[in-house]
Length: 292
Figure 1 (cartoon, rainbow, N blue to C red):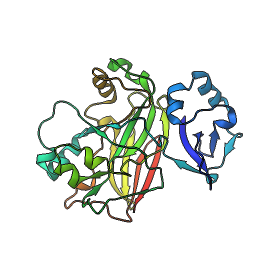
Figure 2 (figure 1 turned 90 degrees about the horizontal axis):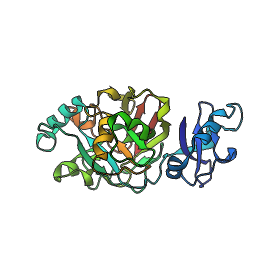
Figure 3 (figure 1 turned 120 degrees about the vertical axis):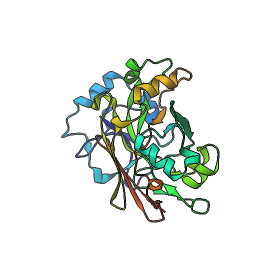
Figure 4 (figure 1 turned 135 degrees about the vertical axis):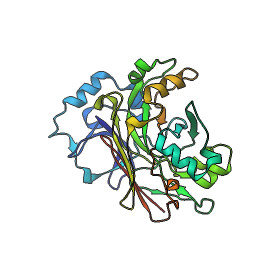
């Protein structure tokens, strides 16, 4: 099931729905009422999930041309938890770009947070902040959305705590990221967190999910990998984090990016105004944005 946040064309009110190939099911129209996606993730019942599944696909549909799909979680409850250097090939290209910032042996995951007040929806523009950024980069990532509060979770039970998956483009200002001793500022400028187009529920995939993950810039294929190549996999991440903290319902965890980011090329291929970035993950969809 693919949950979305949307608005009707020429309207401002946000609604929740389920995305199908031919249109969307409006949750309001079938009597399932939540204020936003954060509330839905925390409170939706198994009975409501069954009700949605039982709806005839020929009825209760709103055509896709009548809506605008927004970020599924326009306002996350808290900062996004991110993993750095979590694909082997990306570790190599990052160290080659700047060894001081990205090099060295790491036996444990690199966790950092990404400040976000409002996420960027599919189709919206990304502010490149070119007054302070000279090396704007993209990172297509599989993101985990936590279903219920998680503490001291074993790897064996990790998937019981996942609501679903979405796509994040972890936009990064490499000059700011490498100038500072941490990555927070270079990852957290306004508009640096496009998310979407949906949250695909965990039951749509095998555990752990082996999905094609790729990105294109102006139709040029840049990243091309699969999510089973994570250095630290999803069960490990959830178990490791919950040994010391509670992951609240709605927590978003970005699992890292594969090789092929702009800084990985010789010379680097950083983003400029007018560039269009497409991030695609099998079974979830395409997240497309343009740099303004």
